Image 1 (cartoon, helix red, strand yellow):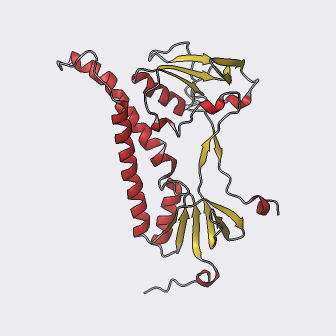
Image 2 (cartoon, helix red, strand yellow; image 1 turned 180 degrees about the horizontal axis):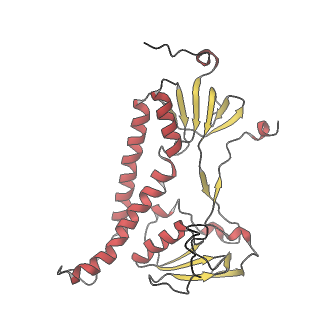
Image 3 (tube, rainbow, N blue to C red; image 1 turned 45 degrees about the vertical axis):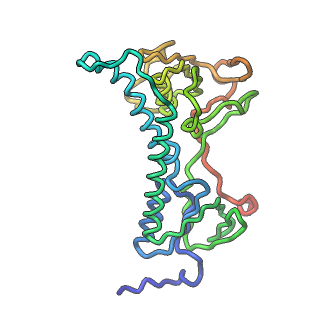
Amino acid sequence: MTDTTSATDTQFDYDLFVIGAGSGGTRASRVAAAHGARVAVAEEYRVGGTCVIRGCVPKKLLIYGAHFAEDLKDAKRFGWQVPDNCAFSWPTLRDNVMEEVDRINGAYTTTLQNNHVDIIHQRAIVSGPNEVTLADGTTKTAAKILIAVGAHPLTPEFPGSEHGITSNEVFHLDDVPKRVLIAGAGYIANEFAGIFHQFGSHVTLVNRTDVILRGYDEIDPRPAAPDIDEQGHRFSVQRCVREHREGLGWLPDGQDERARTDRRRPRDVRDRSFAQH
């Protein structure tokens, strides 16, 4: 048998300490552990990260559900006796989506456990060379520290902004809103615009420029966004959300950079005092 003992065995608690159990953190932890490393991963929310818990997976399931709105209309032309007004239950779809999220979360967790990775359900910050501090004050040491925390939605600050939600909360709504205003026109914004439009919401996208999906597929120039596209989405371009009270206030593009919500801010896992040294 190959001797896997190293100098780090006596120097540190772990060979590798991973902060963040998203797609990158879980794979790095599993692969390192499979090669014999002593690994721990800290996650303050749920194993699986943005993609599994509040991103790609639940969003795609909502897209599949929304697509039935068109499929049911088309089905009549293919001989299916579909009622003109099919009832849709948002709670049913929402709860089934969350059930699938729970299943995948469990699968990720089991995979880490099967590879003998220590899962620490706490927030962790880098507090010194080869050291992290957990939310309960406990410190852990490791030969290598991998920061795999991803990012979180950048929420602008303006009067009434606390009444808005981000893509993190959208999966847990009690009901489908009658009207939705989405700040930004990136791929996440456009996907949710399509989802809620198919569910019957009146959707408006507000964007600082007149280009949708700016920065994507630059070799295929995007035309200026129309007032209303073929799917029924309403665009308000070269505008930013300035205020949310009984109504909405607007500013021309460039006057309020903070109003761009279709962005994500990297998480900070450094201890402030340590970062200053």
